[in-house]
Length: 374
Image (cartoon, rainbow, N blue to C red):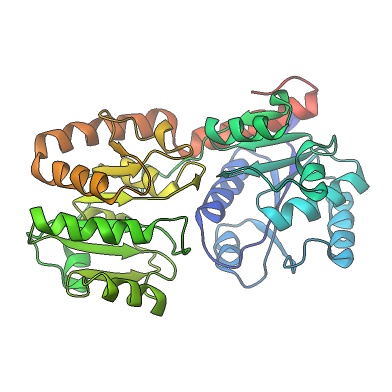
C-alpha cells in the first residue's frame, strides 16, 4: 500500500503503564505493519518508551509534564515539519493540549482519542480542546464516550467511535494459572475473585469490591480475593483491606506484567468502577481469556459486558448486588461457561487489536482524502 502510506505522529505522556499506553503501542505497531510511517512522542525512560523501542517504533522522547510548555510545542512543530507528518494523533490530556497547538501552527489535521466517559471541564480551555475547529476528529473508544461529548456540545459528525481492542493471541482461554496461585499463596481449589484495576481512590471502586468481598465470604467461606494493578499493594490499600477485616483473604499483588496467567488463576473478575470508565481494557482482556465477568453498569462497559450474555452487570456502588452476582457465577458453573463462550466470540469478532487499528486507519484516510469518516 505504498501509494496510501501516511506519516502519523502519536503523542502521549506516559508516567506509568495504563490501558491508554497499551492501546497506543498496539496502534503504532499495527500501523507500522500496514506500511505507514509512525513516530511516537512520549515520556523518555517510561515503560512505553522502552516497549515501543523494543517493538521497532521510531520514538522521540520529550518532557510532556506541562500542558503549555513553549519549548516542547516548538520541538513538536519542528518534528511535524521535518517528518512531513500527515496526521497528528494525541492520546491523553497533556498530549491533547501540546499536540493541538503544534498541529495548528503547522496546519496539520489533528486527531485526539477520548477514553473516559465523563464530561470535560466546562471552561474555555476545555471548550477549545473539544469544540474548536482546530480538532479535526475525536476518536471515542465507545458509544458512551461519544454520547458524553455530544452532550457537551461536540458536533457528532466530528466524532468517530473506534473501540479499544485486545491481543487475542495473548489473552485466550486455556492458559495455566497454577503458578500464579502458588506464588500468591492461594489454595488450588479455593474460589478466587479478582479486581484488576490501578488504584485511584474513589472512582475505580476498590472500596465497593472490598465491601462485596465480606458479603461473598458469608456465602462462600473458602473464597479468596485478589487485587492487581498499580498501587494495589500501597499502604493506603493495605489500610483499607485491614479496616474491612479481610487481611487474611485478600492478596494485594500490585503491578504485574503476567496478566494472562493472572486471569487464568482467577474464577471471577469483578470490576466495580463508579463512573468514567470509557470501556475497560481489563474487562476486555478477561472476556478474551474466557473468564467470568461481573461489572458495574457505567460508561461503555455495557457495550462489552452484555448482561446475561457475555457477563453480569450490576448497579454501581451496590456491594450486595456485586456480591450476589459473584456468588451466582461461582455457584453456577454452567452459566459461567456459557457467558465465557459468548464473550470469547464477541471479542474475537469485534474487539481485537486488528479491528482497532483498522478503525483508526479509516479515520486518518478519511481526513486526508476529505471524506466523512466512520
